[in-house]
Length: 400
Ligand SMILES: Cc1cc2nc3c(=O)[nH]c(=O)nc-3n(C[C@H](O)[C@H](O)[C@H](O)COP(=O)(O)O)c2cc1C
Image 1 (cartoon, rainbow, N blue to C red):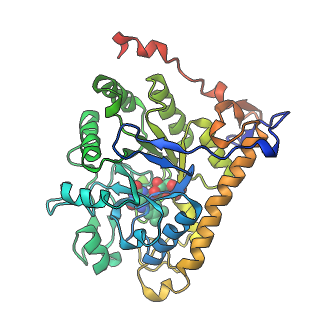
Image 2: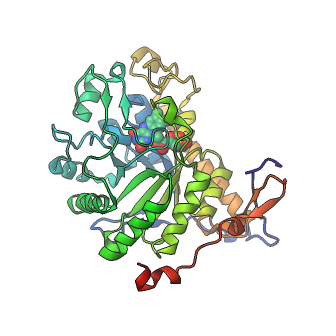
Image 3: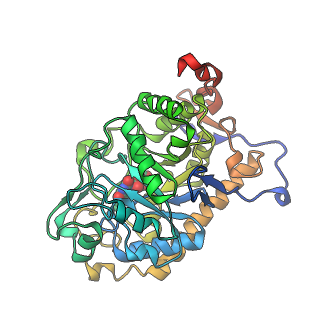
């Protein structure tokens, strides 16, 4: 417990009685769109594309998500029929190659987008700007992992590496980002946000200023902040760990910028990046996240043993390979139960931490409830380390 960075939650002298503990509140995302999303669980499945992971892995995750009442994010590989086999809530990710919703020239196909939005299960759209494992680089799916099924769903060719652009060609600044988000929201009628890695918070400030100029309706409905040490099926080594801020720095920054511009309630924050244990997840809620998503936590639930062969189509556990004989041990029915148990137990154990801190439910956790051990071995409360900025000074008309 002496290592710098360790979280210590501040237990309360008089915690609520178990009988008074509340259910975690349902949060509405996208209050201004035609079909807002009432999200039930604060712990959800992060984007992992069909292609990076196998058909039985997608089936198990989507069934497990239904059982646990959480959402599953498609990742950038488009919507597979296997996502729809269960009745889980789905977040459709629009990657830079727009797999599943692309025209042959790689631009967005509004008709295909409408079709995806027509599925009741698809609740939100996430525009992927970047992910922690490879900020500034597009997705990579090696040819060895592309079969006919995957090629059809993505709208690409079999037997050719599938490399997505390193940026959405039509999004080169915050204004174009808002244009794109509003376009997708107009077409789909559902909440739209974006996923990014943070290098510096300056551009989030520019984004907030642009939102205030246009009106709060124009804001993204959520921002997914991915830590710079994110996972992937394949990434260039130089970007894998040491590019992009890790979540412990990025999350308070983004949350504070939104707070400063009084957009904290309007724009929900989804946090991801090595949030695998209940204390990691409780820390993120204290720091400012509304939701947490995990990719690798759920891979472990599926049986991943970290053999680091995700890009080779030889994953021995069947999670990240399309070779049938290697998938034999991954029974979707059986693994769905493990996926659901993992999600449900994280929620339950975060509730235990919350009650011990004296609040009725996890979303009432605040920075004052967690202390961070410093290199002296002594801890400092998070609200002293990252005090909230003042809203009023920024809301002054001249400042915006
Ligand atoms: C096998 C695999 C595939 C992934 N595919 C995508 C993807 O298609 N789109 C994306 O935005 N992130 C993708 N990610 C990144 C995760 O969604 C997540 O942002 C990252 O791994 C950090 O979360 P974690 O620490 O819980 O794994 C992938 C991760 C893994 C492990």
